[in-house]
Image 1 (cartoon, helix red, strand yellow):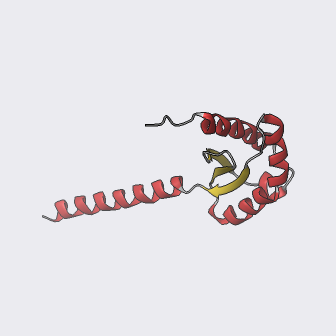
Image 2: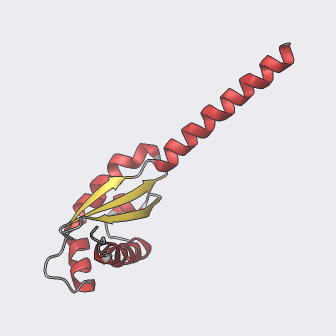
Length: 125
């Protein structure tokens, strides 16, 4: 069995650190500076040619606006990544909306609703 390379993970960590710094300092796009979002994870392809960057967005009504802003800043972000990495090719970056928080909240609400129904059934008996 072949051991999986740790290089994609290490490169992903460098990219995450660099992008987190950019988010912290702020990008010049007003769509991004007036919104609440955070960097969740960077997943690299095994060949290091693609980076999926997962972003959590708390304001549901601004998801499209923030994703547009991130995609328009892709060139600038890639230049910053290129200066931080010492690899032959800079990966293509793909921003993706991470919905884990919303999914967890929805699941929690369903569980709460079901447990509330159980208590009502016990009270009526």
